[in-house]
Amino acid sequence: MIRAGGAAPALLLAYVICGGDREVAQDALQSTWTMAWSRLRTLRDPQWICSWLMSVTASEARRLVHDQRHAATALLEFTLEGMGVPDSAGPAAAVDVATLLRGLSPEDRALVALRYAIGYDAREIGAVLGMSPSRVGKRLGQLLDRARDSVET
Image (cartoon, rainbow, N blue to C red):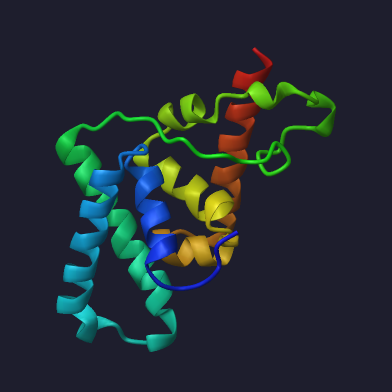
């Protein structure tokens, strides 16, 4: 899991939201840094800079996805355990995560990326996406239920 600050988590977040399109993700990150630099004075508490940058990144990536109507797939590897699939599934590793992610909205992809690719907890995700931690937990639970249902069928 990536827990360090800097561009790597932001690029990973943008990459997932942008459906795995590296160029669009890099455009989103470039736009994020430009916007962040111009709005740095609006940051009230410097301790929240990472959450603030991730929030700006998520917004920019979603904006680009909506503007460009991009529908590329994200090629990410998640462990079955991280996806909430029981170990008894064994070689059900054939779960096509890219297809599961492609079926999500950019907003839901942001939630999944922040939790499972970057490793943020519900409080951190809530700070980035402007949701309460309980809402984050509920939404993640719904997404995992949908993923389990699609794997079982």
